[in-house]
Image (cartoon, rainbow, N blue to C red; front, side):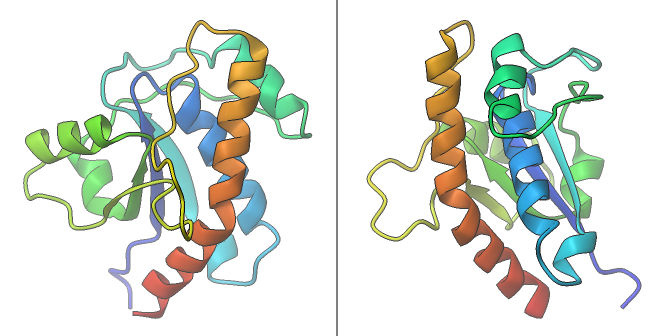
Length: 161
């Protein structure tokens, strides 16, 4: 099927903290999977950002501490073209999902919270660590890592449709 969408997008506010970390963590997980998961395009974007900004220093450190690089990341605004190409869009908070729902046309049906597929999860949102200490970024990273197995399973079901 030539028109099959193969893009997964992680979204936060400025695309310099949470979503770049989520993008790289998910890419790392998919690299250990079989096709077609391994070939999915994974990107991140922001609902309120300027293009070309570097990731925050503590995001870089938090990922480096688990052996993942944020090298070559530059912020990118979420736009309708990206939304239209996505098989799934994973947001950090309900406010991100609401912003996308207000501006996207047509309304995307593939819009989720990153942590909503974790069984019996108490907190579905991932708070913004911007400007905080490294341990806040590491806690943010760890809450993302916790969601990765459920996201991989969910994306497998989307590809099977």
